[in-house]
Amino acid sequence: MTMTSARNPSQEKIQKQLLDAASELSDEVDQLQFAEPVTHVYNPLRYAWNLHQQYVRQIGADAHVLFLGMNPGPWGMAQSGVPFGEIDSVVQWMGLKGEVERPSNEHSKRPIEGLNCSRSEVSGRRLWGLISERYPEPSNFFQQHFVANYCPLVFMEESGRNRTPDKLPAAERDALQAVCDAHLKKVIAAAPWTDLVGVGAFAENCLQRVVKSMEQTSVSIHRILHPSPASPAANKDWAGKATSQLVEAQIW
Image 1 (tube, rainbow, N blue to C red):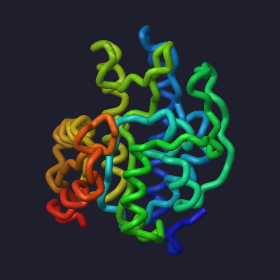
Image 2 (cartoon, rainbow, N blue to C red):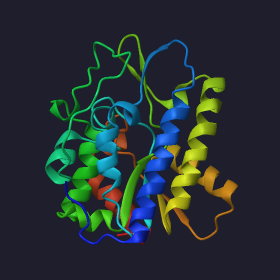
Image 3 (cartoon, rainbow, N blue to C red):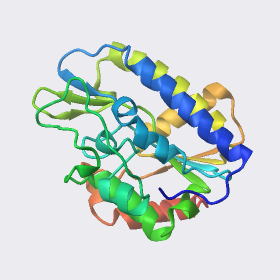
């Protein structure tokens, strides 16, 4: 696994706080109930915990830019335990290795194959592709940046169709939001972030809501275009548009 070469107490503390928060989040979301049309719920923090730990342990002591996504995609974090975790990026660029377990209620159309998955997560390929192009050595990225997800769960309907958290019924959405907001507070408190970047409008709104509740005044909140192919704007030079947004925000 590729990691930052220098380890120090502050780096260890950040990693421990993030891992402890993720473990607590995993337990808490497992207690939530979701009704039809959601028929299958995956929690990669549970069955892909080994890879998620490896991922978190890449973060460096000087991390001050946090990118936040919405929730795992079926061919990304659902397989790898890594936010936006497109397999090639996780294996070839990050250098992560290991097996994943299987979710208890596995959908026949959305099998979990871990790092052996041959499908590509387009959003993750775009995001990590841009990052790896700018930072050929992953430790140079993770020394100052980190990527997290707001919600760790994958929601699927009987057909196999993905359902995002914002499309859940109000009661389910509110219960999930309470748990995920509490986790996001812990993530924000874990490192001396100066810039929080929502990958898409949903994540930006989550950051604004949680930061406001924490009365944090020392962080700046930004947004970049979500790389999902479901967004027409993302399908034409997403990398160029996202780079321009990060340059304008004085992050890159």
